[in-house]
Amino acid sequence: MLKRCVFLLVLAFSVSAVAADPVSADGTGPLLLRRIHVPVLMYHYISNPPADADAIRLDLSVTPNNFEQQMQWLNAKGYTSITPDQLLAALTNGGPLPDHPVLITFDDGYIDDYTNALPTLKHFGFVATFFVVTSWIDQGLKEYLSWDQAKEMVQDGMSVQNHTVEHKDMRNRDHDWLVYQILGAEESIEAHTGVRPRFFCYPSGDFDDAVLRELRAAGVEAAFTTNDGAYDYSDDVLRLPRVRIHGSTSLETFAQLLTWER
Image (cartoon, rainbow, N blue to C red; front, side, top):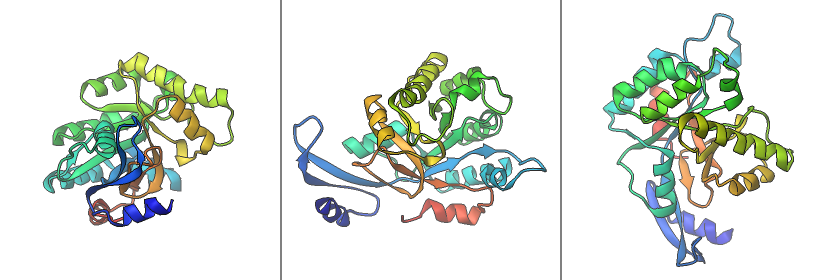
């Protein structure tokens, strides 16, 4: 642990790497510990909240107008949206990233991902990642995406990834339950979109050591939390932080979050 702290102290503020004593996963050379500054934006609803919305719904709801302004700001400032694959490649292999990378993510799979977020993203030439709860889609609930819509989004260049089958607290669960939530959702997403998900998002950000073990066993390559932060570390790809965008986030605050040094 002491070695890791020493190594990370000398890293630069954008993308940097330093050789450490441990060998790489394939055993061919030294492990590189990388730190990358890539804001991973976390959205939920892109819609005007209903008149009777509670505090949680209000907090999770970014209006379509505010979302468009935020995407317009990103475009004007020269940001390029990236995929989780690009982020992972940069962390693990030193893969190239654009000058101003941003990863745009949406949790839960609400219908307004398709009706409100998707047209704006396409207008500005951005790609995004949508973490879906498969049982909510299976039930045909009107407030969530359909599988046809999810497939269309993939065909439009978007990424549809794993947010479990039921969106329940994953802590203190047994092996079989965790396998069902992780692999069951993977298989369902692949069956309906034609693409096997490789990335995961923890429901409500909750996990424990057992969840991490099952994700590794399932072949999940990286996982996203609800922890605040804009820096990603190559030795912690199952605990990637994000930048939460609230319903109350002004454009000025949004701009500050994109350059957040945390």
